[in-house]
Length: 98
Length: 173
Image (cartoon, chains in turn yellow, red):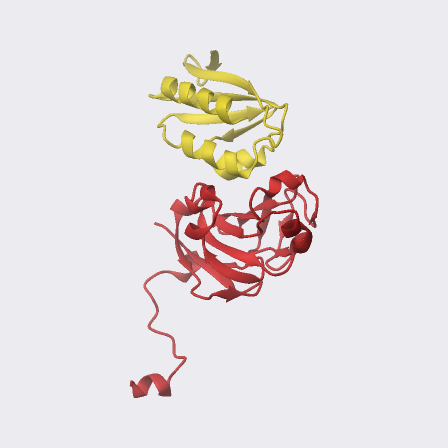
């Protein structure tokens, strides 16, 4: 869990997890599409971060633009009403697909 | 028989009440037989997980830009390329099924990520004979990944040459 400052005096709590990609092909088009579809099921805003770059996990082109390869560690964050559920399902999804 | 039709065969119908400035034409990036995306053997594409569009069974190994836009993502095995059009359409062209397994063999790229392209620019080249001989299908889906933002009109042609109109997108208000 990370605390990040949004506005002065206002602190936002969001959920996150890290995952290191094991699929030799990385996060290529087809699995990326499935991942995005999964993320779209949630109301919460879901992001994927690799190094300095961050992308909306609900947008295929944003995710593909990160060029996530085998061995890369990504951080997934969710923020919103169903963030816990989103985290659990997405974690599961990463473990069984990548 | 409508006589007027034969007298004025090419007269366009009255202007549709759709503003043309929100229309964007997606040209076919490849030459070949048109296949409804729902019929593609790659289930992920048939289910439109990656977007809605049309597939083409290529007869030659060249992929041209379908629009004026920018290369948003280029898979490093050069079997797929993503282009964002000037009108905001995110177009994914995926050459073949499971071709990621070829790890770039028989594929060549002429562009880089972030590069601006014009409609008709050569993006990728591939060797159809060798890829098919290696046991891969070459059906190439051309899909709009942010399709919920548009109304897509698809070509009714059975065969397209690269540059032919493949789809027309209208902004979904």
